[in-house]
Image 1 (cartoon, rainbow, N blue to C red):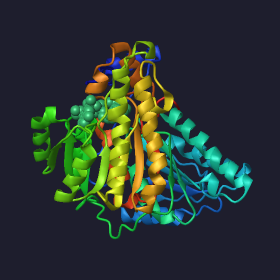
Image 2: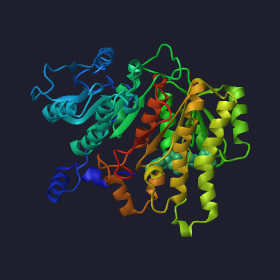
Image 3: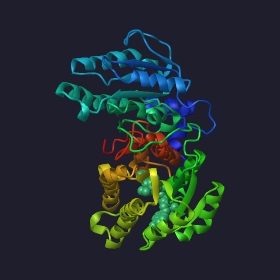
Image 4: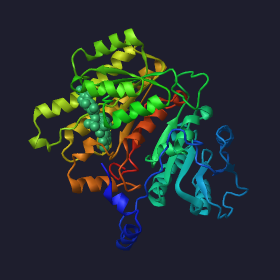
Length: 450
Ligand SMILES: NC(=O)c1ccc[n+]([C@@H]2O[C@H](COP(=O)([O-])OP(=O)(O)OC[C@H]3O[C@@H](n4cnc5c(N)ncnc54)[C@H](O)[C@@H]3O)[C@@H](O)[C@H]2O)c1
């Protein structure tokens, strides 16, 4: 659905009016388009605090991606030259006084960042710090990153990557995602990189999912359709699953992607069995995306038990049953990726959505609870939690609530289905085996649950 306010405030008259009235002035996001030259935003400034251990690996990634990374002689050296990314290795900041380095670098450089720029701070996970002062300084980075995300505006995004000691070479896919247009609607996120659960071998960075079989549930429209399209664009063979009632459209979607259609209600009692049989006949999966989901909103006192049960069955019971069946029945290959689709309603709760929020919080529980078992099979399981995404689901929301949903985030607009799809493609990447049991919000840093 078109965002009229976003279009209006980007006309000269609308811009003037919004500025005069002190209203939000969102910039249309610059998103990745296939075939676009270069992946990372260029140039960037790369700086490190004392004892930073990640700069060497970052330099290697920049060299491999032809990214110009200027390393200032002094972290607070003044410059007016515009850049598109600021990267700060804070992994060695060992106590509270050393956090001043963070202040000095960003205070000196933040005005250099152009609109649509990217900020990436890298740290050491506090739980992997051996002394208290280091752990405190590292934990403090979260507050800094989330504040900067709310402050910078102009479609600039800010994230924190905690890289476990020994996992320095595992941050490649995440650095590429967060410093590119693919992460346009992800802001204020904290991601932990650990030792990988698998051994991916050589990676084709141009089409990283080549030779991988991906299952996407609810692929007929909205976010699921975008996921299927993006995964196919990255080289995957996609199995598009949706309910039998939409089989004709599903066949068209699958054909347009050179994939296969699977008409199946994921809540059917025989769904797991049918999926395993399908995998046995046609090939086991490397990527499984549990996207299918429904809402049946009512305040709890007015909600029927049927509405409660239906939402629980589609959004939570089915992903739980299918994930365990695929893992136990060898329906997913080593090196595989399972990705659940939660929601910020599952993090913050939402009026009239007690069933939906319960189911989506349960998806987070599934991701966290199943991660150790999945890792033993060399599979990762992660989740995305979309905020307000422009689909048929959100088009049903009454006008005023819809407008509030769109504006109440750092980017002051709703996301597009492809924003969720790009985050899923990053988690599905063969080089993302160091990310497991995590949920990343795709919500423009929504105030809900922040
Ligand atoms: N749109 C948003 O703003 C938003 C925000 C947060 C989370 N999400 C989540 O993202 C996912 C996709 O949302 P959307 O907006 O694209 O929804 P949508 O309603 O546009 O599409 C959902 C798809 O799932 C399919 N589906 C429903 N029940 C099914 C079943 N039992 N078996 C198989 N397929 C089934 C539908 O037929 C449909 O094609 C959902 O899990 C939703 O909860 C969406």
